[in-house]
Image (tube, rainbow, N blue to C red):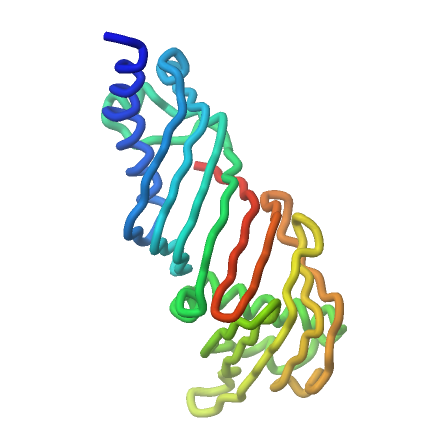
Length: 237
């Protein structure tokens, strides 16, 4: 049997099914995806993989809907011995996944059902208020129910209701230009907000949020009904 055949057998019989199972275990749902694995025989037997590329459609991660994703990672080490005994794949060290994701307005609207996104948007509002030196306002004591997201060229519009009581709500609308400030920071500019008395009808410039050391953004494109983002993120098994 040639080296090529052995490599194909190892990937087809062990690595590919284990990686597919691991990918599915990280997601809520996945409509369709393909995997391309690059690895040499001698490296596979040590649990080392040169690279993995994944193309996926209709992905849902913690309630966040993604229309399309193209992801790649290199220099992976896995628990091959355990995989051969039928155990799940585990990463032996953190990896960085480099990729590009595409979302449309429908994806974002559906994602508003996700606690991850809705809490992130609410935290964003609270950070904005703190940036404006507003530390005492009703919004800190109430939840926000987000209703819709609209996308335009470089701009995002958010609308929701501040829930005061079961029968009392107050509308909030935010429109902002969104760009990458540097690889780890998002810049919100020309930000206009309605529904919070302390900053009603005020335009805010150069509000920056730091995403942390585990994220590096390369590209962010917002057009009508469409958002594209590329970069890399650290993943721990």
